[in-house]
Image 1: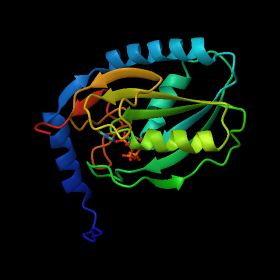
Image 2 (image 1 turned 135 degrees about the vertical axis):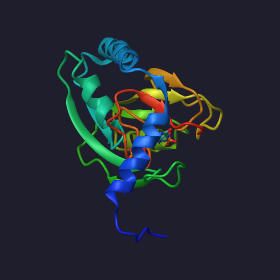
Image 3 (image 1 turned 180 degrees about the vertical axis):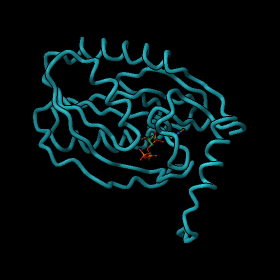
Image 4 (image 1 turned 90 degrees about the horizontal axis):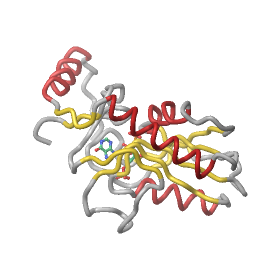
Length: 193
Ligand SMILES: O=P(O)(O)OC[C@H]1O[C@H](OP(=O)(O)OP(=O)(O)O)[C@H](O)[C@@H]1O
Ligand code: HPA
């Protein structure tokens, strides 16, 4: 059912501030910076000579993409796609393509950048899409992987991964809680979730 109540910024602001005030910080900004440095070094070693084509997965991948790609000292191209399966909620559903990639991938070394590999259905579908589109190789880079055994494809891992988090709903550094706090400078989990 669509929410037809008028938007009440004051109520949302107080709720979201309370959420942050009580949240547990799982990863600090310093730890994220170090993880991004390490990922960038590994990506440079493996793909630095390939003129790779990076795709940011909107919305969550936005912040990781910006911070990661400014650490890469070789020529590359950037584009984006927007696939979502949580759509502001706390549980994933069907993958919904808001913007599918139009740029030709034939013969290109493609790197998918996202914030989190949780159940992995999003990344698995995107990898499949890029392979069908003729990419020479498809690599995945995520800031965090969540530890649990509910992966859509058993054993699915990202090629480049900065951090692991425990099996809790997390937000910050691109990841949202009901659409908010993607801007939080760290990775947080709501109290009790
Ligand atoms: O591994 P999975 O369980 O598939 O979940 C990971 C995906 O979920 C989030 O996107 P979401 O669908 O919330 O859209 P958003 O990027 O707009 O937040 C996140 O940015 C990943 O793309
Ligand atoms: O734990 C999460 N937080 C935010 N977005 C997500 N998308 C998948 N899992 C998560």
